[in-house]
Image (cartoon, rainbow, N blue to C red; front, side, top):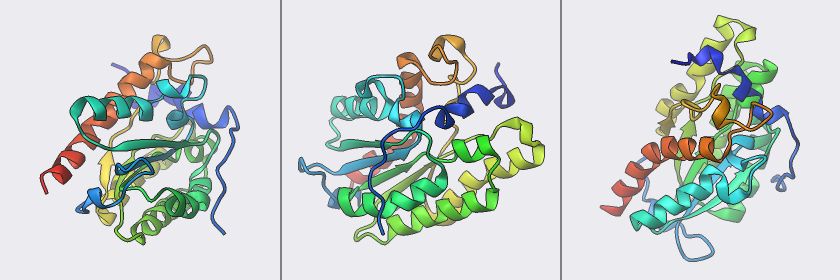
Length: 228
């Protein structure tokens, strides 16, 4: 079995390329009250190159695969991929206001922090940024359901740093009433056949595994909403 400390290569994802950014702005919620432009409630994925699907056609990134699962399950939601390669949690914090105003999601999935961990950025700043992202989302009326995706830091910064980094995600999810999604690269990171030639970005097969991991957390949230 691959240990989480052998997962360093995949934690380099967001530093490997810059992508176009969207403009930034100067779990008991009724998720069916917000709708996407097509008339269906919107699931907004905010993330790094893991979410953007760097190196692949966007249709192969896990948010698009989630859309297929939604359609197959008869859950009438629309996904929107707002992944940006190279982004830190500070960058996600900078643009969350614009995204909330423009997209009006019913569900917000936050996948950020890989670059913070790669660069050894302050864990306190990561915590503050994630809190601010959730707080901004919760100011919407009605607020979206928020899912926070766990992430791992590069092990070369020491056990103290990696432990503190790892703890931020479930702690904020618990404190803010968000849904915690465990490390989305489990079963993908460190597996050559599931990563592209650079060894750090998931292949289409790797993205399918990530979609399964995300679906395990997301489907119960949507099923619960459908019962209301």
